[in-house]
Picture 1 (tube, rainbow, N blue to C red):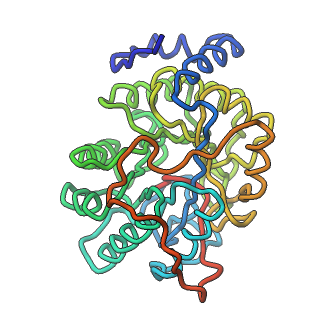
Picture 2: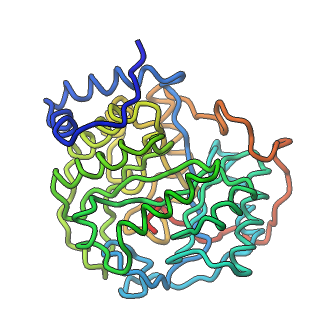
Length: 355
């Protein structure tokens, strides 16, 4: 029996699922997850910060905001060859999705955006999925990214509509939803989720899940991020998020959106292997990995490729290939062997979709 897709979940239903006895909740989510064609597959993703710091937004959690002294140096848009080199090494390590993030409030129709389009085309042509997070988009920009071959666009809602203004004041929740609507007018898939630990209540988390699960179709990707407490930001002393609360969000998201990828994203390094195993059992089927153990824009270390390969092997999980069940957007002929060897150590980022 296959779980039917629903877009009419009530807040009361979502809260009742979220509050189930923990093992019952995980069991129910695991049963839904086992309906996936390949429930033992986990997609390994790589995030590259292609433009770092000096963001004018005041997101209370973000190391890249120009409002806070976080020790992050501003870096202009990366050279395309550097991005291609990182993407090439990531693919060789089993990564099947490369996410490129720029610390912009919104994309501008200028030379930098044109360069990002070139990066999208060439990384896609390597034979990996490409996701971008570039801030707010208008309809024309979304269309240009589609034409360049973009596979996914990340734009997190972060939290509930009512709590959002307590975290960010320089843009509105409606701004976020408008960008998601512009992306939905193209064939680019949606990657949108939230961050746990922003001072939200359980009701806020339920409201976020309510918003996501009412989207038709559901977002193809739903990241569940755990706050990385960055010194210098207003949230540097926020309480830790108990693991059980993370597990409940993953399991509830899996039940509500049974066909979506549920991505265990920022903050994963805080979790033990067995805690991550519970997340995979409850429906998480994507992680972010790195070629180094530390990340420029995060306050915590990140698991590296070798560490993650060992974990997946231990748990009997396999790496998901790119474009699973989809036609390659640009008719990829296979990976190109090129690259630019003079950019061995370009800057990178851990947290996914924080813009």
